[in-house]
Length: 408
Image (tube, rainbow, N blue to C red):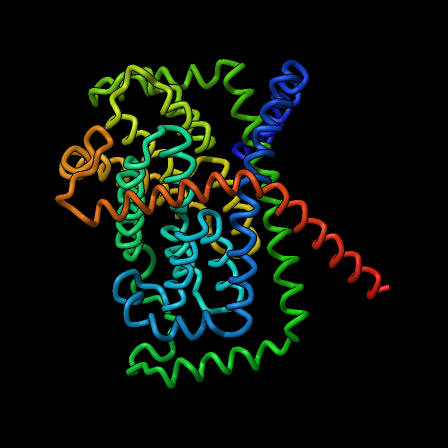
């Protein structure tokens, strides 16, 4: 009872403090809101919407079930999740967070995952997409596209490591969702599963597409709200000197690790919002590029409380618990920072020193050129993103209005 009352008192005090802060710092709050809004309608919305819509269509037509049957022999031994986890993992890496959480929640709602399997899956399928790592962070903040190779390798190797660790999470005698896990799977069985799923979901193509658009845009509107909210919270915490107070505790740890204490403030900011934290890290002049890469890798993997709040909101629609996801973010951050550190000398120092990749490793040249193209795509997205967002919202309003009129 006392714990519940203390929680109520804390939440009431926190909200009151935020309201007073908004009144005390109106201009700073407005600027932070604009910054969050720009990030959402220029980058997040246009980059995530196509993936969300296509994912909904693939689920409705049974393609995801088809992929799940084929990937069962791979995903089950490695990560102890059904084959559909392979689809969620791929889409999560391609589109970025919180796509993995949205698709995991959808798979759980359809009964293709048990509760424990869903908690395992959501822990390692939420990641930053290559477009953000190369375009925004490496080029936009560090002006160094080759750095994206280190950040991407550390990020995705950390994801795999988290998945391998989380396979041990949950009861060993848990009932599996794979009815045919002991059978020899075949293409014929995969096509049969695809056909059964499509027949079961007997919505016309127009209705399926409309539902996909509605569901995707509603999710993205929620994501936009969180981005703007945490952008404001981060700015207010800075002006209230709370960020600086917390950074003092991090300074000791960074000094023990041989890093400059100037990275403490960007680190704390990155715990709340990855974009601001990564940008601030790139602006620390006293830090070496390796130390900046290590801190940025942790920030990208931890995802920030902003992304975690988005995931928590999505998972709240199911029985999937948030605690395993939060625990996995800490592990992912540690692994990614560690991988960035150990890969620095054998990869960056050897092949990308002074930003000039050598001819000794064609794979690294390819990754670097891919990063350059991703940076160009990111720049194009910033230019045309707002127009795409506005057009999509108009389509959403039209579909919503048509359905309201039909219901009447």
